[in-house]
Amino acid sequence: MLEAETIKRGDDSGNGTLLKYTSPTGAVVKAIGVPQSWNTPLGPTWCYVVEGNDLTLVDPGCHGSVDYLEQGLEELGHSLASVNNIVISHGHLDHDGSCLPVVQKSGAQLWAHEVYGTMLQADRWEMETSWRRDVQSFEAFENSNTATRVKDHHERNRQLTLNHPVTDELQSDGLTFYYTPGHSPDELCILFDQFLFSGDHILPLITPHPSVAMSYNTFQSTLPAAYQGGNKIYGLIALLTSLKRMATLEGDLTVLPAHRAFHRGKFNPIGVERATEIVEHHRERCYELIEIIKRGPIELAVLTKQYFAHRELEEHNFFLAFTEVMSHIELMQESGDVTTSADPAKGSVWSNGLGSGALISWEGTDRFSALIDGL
Ligand SMILES: [Zn+2]
Image 1 (tube, rainbow, N blue to C red):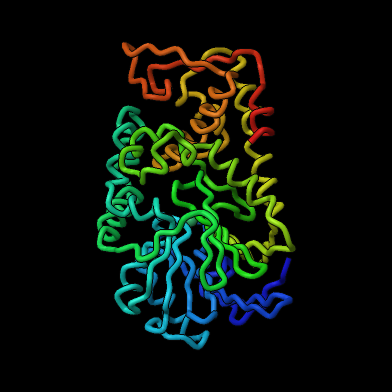
Image 2 (image 1 turned 60 degrees about the vertical axis):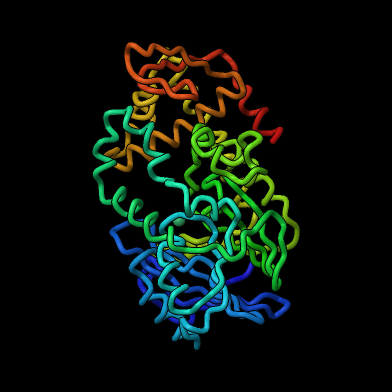
């Protein structure tokens, strides 16, 4: 994989940093470390600049950061107005939050997966939160700054029009789009020359947060017809399937992730083999969760607290941890290793059999590992 050349050094997380990657064929990609507008250890969103026939930006960054993007572009010799295309890896606010002002200032064409287009109109937040209210600890989350940011993001992006709804393996102006759902139902990886823009699908140092399979039930009827036949786009199985697919891409590819390309003063170069490492991380997590469930039937919230006992789990951290564990339990329900017994009198039970009124029990097997191998 290719080394980055530093055009301008920003801070130790990469905020304000400008990078340049040159492939053996001479293809050039530049990167701007666009800071987040809130306090987070995540570091910047890496916005990639492709100088082809057109000027293309991959993931402009979060709302409120457009001045940093504009400054970075100018230092690279471009104006915001000269941007022709914006490609969105997926519809999360740290990636497409500044889309609206960038489109308004540049008149650029918007490219994203076709599911992204449907999601712009559907009230993603409302649909995703209805079940959260059933668990007491989520109240704090719903009133958090994170929740407010997500709601504002949705309202703002309703004004966007997706000019180019992308489907799997579409090719345009040297870009090949791969549909890689799992972290988000609209996630894309984009191949350009020997570079793979991986959004949040393949990240160095950290692993993408899996969505929960149950969300599919809520969104099914709003999705394009091709996605209504059964869930292949939400949950850990979808994520692992997409990771395994990217791991098989051939050639000496340099993966250009949306986060952590540079962190704590160091570059973190990765190739597609990082996708396999992430698959193995989730297999290991299933084994670790089984170790706790073996001790006796347990509620999901209790399991989450025990599993993440070493970490602070407040507000949105608890929610992220809870859904992370849920996605693994869903996979092990699918493989038949765990079952749930519901008692609606004790709390709520959701469509996947989990909830505060449900106990998770171990069936004495670990067939999840074979299930993962078979994806
Ligand atoms: Zn992200």
